[in-house]
Length: 81
Image (cartoon, rainbow, N blue to C red):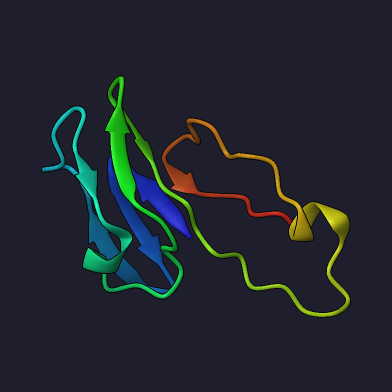
């Protein structure tokens, strides 16, 4: 996954949230991505997105119970393993 401004790229597919205004809520069902599992909200200028992190049976606790990723810089987003 990577991020550039309000554009996320997940498994090579681009999702552009730049047009989402402050205070708006976009239902997760409106985003054609199996990894977006909740509403997308813009609050205080920040996007709040809940993503599914697929984990196998050997996954670590940090992957099974990940901490929030807050304001990641542009570029590749480090996901828990």
